[in-house]
Length: 133
View (cartoon, rainbow, N blue to C red):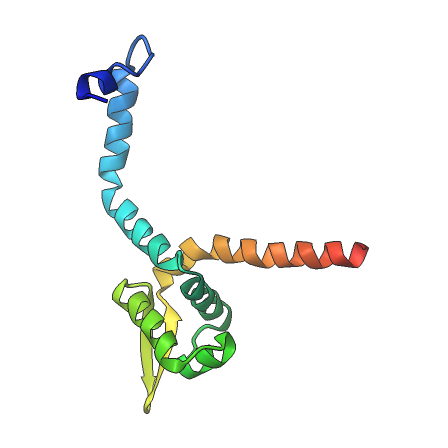
């Protein structure tokens, strides 16, 4: 399809320039937030990393060894996921002797809590449904 044909596929009669301008301004004024949120969601889009984030929210902080035991994975595999989360600014670390503990960065907690609440609620709904049967 040529560029001229693409432009003619819209069937609206009049463009609401005020609405279009307002929407563009909303996107522009929130550009940093969109970038941060898309980065967070991209990192949380991996099932293992989402589980790690859920566990960190539930427990406060965990070390890679604990996460490896919980997830049934090797410590190096868990560490790779933690590195991505740390590099993405999603988690922070605290050292206690030779052990490094990971926790969620506080500003990400508010964004992720609704997702984790959904997970917990789904589990509760499934359990209550099973009890009825």
